[in-house]
Amino acid sequence: MGRIVVIGAGLGAMAAAARLAVAGHAVTVYERSATYGGAVGRFERDGFAFDTGPGLLHLPAVYRDLFVKTGRKPLEECVGLRQVDPAARHVFADGTRVDLPNASRAGTVAALDAALGAGAGARWGDFLTRAREAWDRTRRPLLEEPQPADPRALAVEPYPALKAGLLRRPTRTLAQLGARELGDGRLVALLGSYAEAYGFPAASAPASAAVLPYMEQTFGSWYVAGGMRALADAVYERCRERRVEFVFGEPVDEVLTGAGRAVGVRLASGATVEADHVVAGAPVPALLREQVVPWERSDEWPRFQTHGTGRLTVLLALRGAREEDAAHRTVVHGGDHAPVTVLRPDDPALRPDAEHESVVLSAAVETLPGQDWPGLADALVEAAGRAVPGLAGRLLWREVRTPEDVREATGAAEVPGPALADARGEWLPAPNRSPVPGLYFAGGWSHPGGGLAHAGMSGALVAGLIVEGAEFRGSR
Image (cartoon, rainbow, N blue to C red; front, side):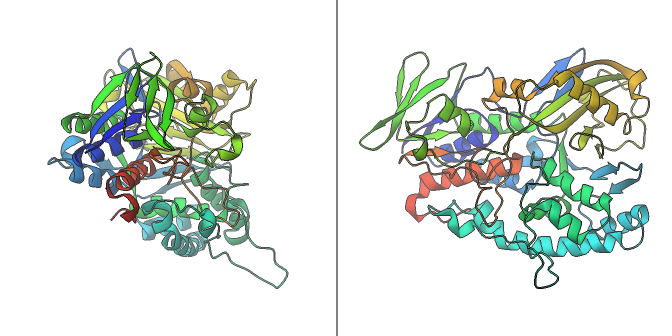
């Protein structure tokens, strides 16, 4: 079988590596940092531990499939996986609070009626019915099949927006959809928060982003015991079991080509490594910026999704026990910033003892030069005070992680989002097949896009393209 070089050890890249190794390929992963996981990082201090990347998992079936296809032990024997209930507590600008149950449409409708008034739940339920149509139309081409060479087939708005009157303008953005169909400003804010969680501003995200709340509320939100870093640990160990070789602290400077295809890589040390296929798991923008990929003209670069937003994360070490009715995830709406997500996992592995608590705050922010990161961090902490009782008096210390810190760790300051269909085709990430034969893209910056589940799907698609070649039609 072939020799495979994988650039980067993120979740999507490792998912591809494990599948390729099971298929009989000799796989070596070169990672520029000292560890694996990519954006799924961890910070520890004084007995506190924090996830610095995603805090919850959606569509766990993606990783269940990975572990079934690559070994004897299923996912649940490798990590402790549990549903989060309520899935989220939302605190709106007017002080209204609502707890949304995990993967229960009827429960969600009832909770919204109780908190926002009769009829609110029905409007949300009707919206989810239309969102399901968009999901059914796009699930296969956007999640389970390789992106076609001509993506114009996906440049169709799949959401069946309500229309009224012959002169009524079409609903193009998620914000327009919310204002037209949901009415209540709190429901509009609820809708927008699902897109903002991926860094998509509701004012510019296409109406097809309606699939994001549908996906979460249908398939649920899950937490991995010990923090999401434990999932990266499990995938890394599965790769090692399949005899994938990892070389850490070894950047790849260049993808080498010959006879019109990728034939290997040149390492920062100057050594060259031959390969039959190269899988680039690093962020596509970084690969292009650092000229790792063999394209000199910008018009030859593969298309990749970019929306100008990153993530500001604030890690809080608190004294005092977590109250019994605390929600694992609270989304705080209002203010001059995007919704603030407050994660408070009830996990002994993340705190020194029961009389302390680790809390992670995050919000989408613009990656503009000169941002007042300390001021923005203060704003996040102030907002989180509406979710964590007595926060100011409990704070021992905080650690701020800016988009520039993310760039240092992963190569890109922005956070990639999942692929979305729209009439302009502007929300699609880079295809898994690069313009150079033998070179593939895997991970959050490539099809089907960002998020833990999507990155895992990306790895599965790349493995299928390499193993089955032109016969590959998608994951099954």
